[in-house]
Amino acid sequence: MSFIEKDHWLTGEERTRIETAVREAEARTSAEIVPIVAIGSGRYHRAVDIAGVWCAMIAFLLLGLFSPDRLVVLWEGFVVLCLGLAVGAFIAHAIPAVKRGLASETEMSARVMDAAFRTFRTYGVGETAGRTGILIYVSLFERMAVVIGDTALADRLKPDDYASIRNALLERLKAGSLTEGLIAGIHTAADLLEPIAPRAPGDINEISNALRLLE
Image (tube, rainbow, N blue to C red):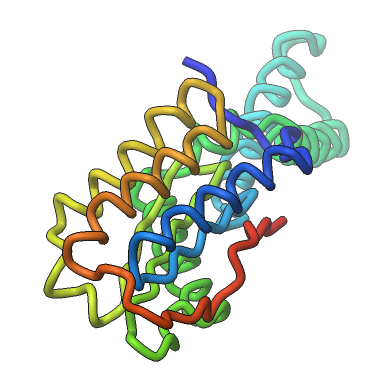
């Protein structure tokens, strides 16, 4: 199963398609739909440290196996341990799958949720006149998405509704298409929002339809 990694970025045409999807969705609802894509939501230093320790241990064991009489000279052991730590850290940074595999699911979920709430505040999703902003936040490194609705939507959207938006997005993301995933999530959000928050005459677009990309 493939997934978008950080070396993928959106073309101008893809961004336009996503922004068009937002505009079409907001033509049906008074809600402000704000899609945001982040490369990652945390640095995961512990996972990097674990990779370094494992490499250091393996390097030290190899040094012992190939040393005369299985005796390791103090300074050689120290140098090998330091090099192992550095190599492990480099591998964790260079290969996202390694760092992701060493980071706990609980920590990644917490980091993504925290980043989503910060983004919700930073980009004014919770400051619209009708309090109908809804954030669609995707974090590529963790392979996770969060959907947050403002207070006016809290009593109208059920947890299953938020899950439907998230699942529509992730299904296509996991197939390798960030653009199609976002468009699917946006359209699903519009389908759910139109009956409960229909667009009112004279409704004003309070937040730009542009896709935000966070590195």
